[in-house]
Amino acid sequence: MASRSLTLAEFLEEEQVPRSTFFKWKALGLAPATYKLPNGQIRIRRAVYEAWLATLEESQAA
Image (tube, rainbow, N blue to C red; front, side):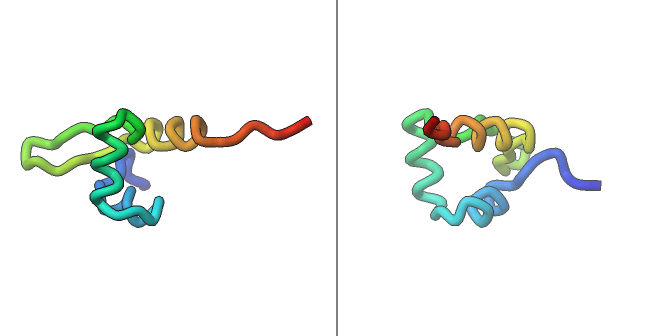
């Protein structure tokens, strides 16, 4: 069964961006929404990640 969320490391690997870029995006409101576990680890729900990716798609020219 696939996990319903990504760790920050998984997100960074998937998008091939450094941790610093993610936190810049987060500060600018451009990163997908995250939640923090009691141990401080950051997670991103897969559904939120997929929706975030969809917002980045460029429309096709007619």
